[in-house]
Image (tube, protein in one colour):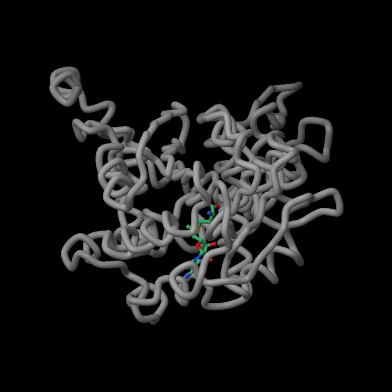
Amino acid sequence: MAEQLSQSELDYPFKLLEYFNGFRVSKAIFSACELGVFDLLLQSQKPLAAREVGQALGTSEDGIERLLDVLVGIQILEVEHVEGTVYYSSTDVSNLYLAKASPKSLHPMIVYFSQTIYPLWSNLGDAVREGKNQNEKAFGLPSEDIFAAMYRSEEEMLKFMGLMNSTWVIDGHDIATAFNLAAFKSIVDLGGCSGGLASELAREYPSSRVTVLDLPRVIQTAKQHFTDSGSTIHFQEGDFFEGDLPPADLYVLARIIHDWKEEKCEQLLRKIHSSCLPGGGVLIVEALLFENRRGPITAQLFSLNMLVQTEGKEHPPSRYTRMLTQAGFSNVQVCRTGKSYDAVLAIK
Ligand SMILES: C[S@@+](CC[C@H](N)C(=O)[O-])C[C@H]1O[C@@H](n2cnc3c(N)ncnc32)[C@H](O)[C@@H]1O
């Protein structure tokens, strides 16, 4: 793969230049979201000139015109020329994923990437040099307590929970159906945050009782901001490192293992094994690295992100299999979804 890239790049480094510009593309999308471009174009129901967009959003005409052109260039918006005037309009993709009002909106993900991940990544070199997260440099908070940094204010907690929630809007169904989980009648999603994945599980397995366990502040915020009247999931305040876990047939650990040092993960898995009802299991949900270290690039970037923000990392399936069998689990099965997140199921 790498050999192919270096061969084809020798004449002219197209791909390299595209990679260099990656941050500009990200920032253009983030800024357009934050300015409300996609919401305006969805609501307007008709193409708008740059001047009209600028007036509605309170921006300069020149600035917004250049931003709109970039969004056309990356095929997120459409453009047409009518009697000498240029009009911009939304696309199905921008309406579905970038406008706030869409049920599949990724707006909370973009806000978090733009306002939290982006400043953290400006310290990437230091993170690599020091081998630790950059919460101290970016936010003036100690690097050891990763969730104290993530939840440093109510606003930050809501933004983080919005990010977690929006993943399951696009990935939840694939994860809930990666294995047939119908036999597990009680499911506890440990560190289940906003309940986004738990809701998908409850939808898919209506005869199972699905409970989200998370830190008290998170549970209170989840109940207040992320549940609707039709929700069937339950919430429980707790700390998965301290005290007993509620008994369950299936424990879900979605994006938990990648936050922590391996000793802590092993300790948590042993604890889950002892609380798990006979015949029960554990479902780990993470972005799985390839064993040969050649990708997937999304999982490799997530792993670098874990360095910058947490004390954990992403792993290949063999590492999860080893952790699970050491904790006493057997029959480890791996499902790669081909999307951002994968699933690993093991049985007690
Ligand atoms: C990376 S987030 C993953 C959230 C969710 N599982 C998901 O995938 O959307 C980690 C979650 O673990 C929770 N958490 C961290 N430490 C915890 C602890 N000691 N006990 C319970 N939950 C904890 C956080 O509040 C957060 O919701």
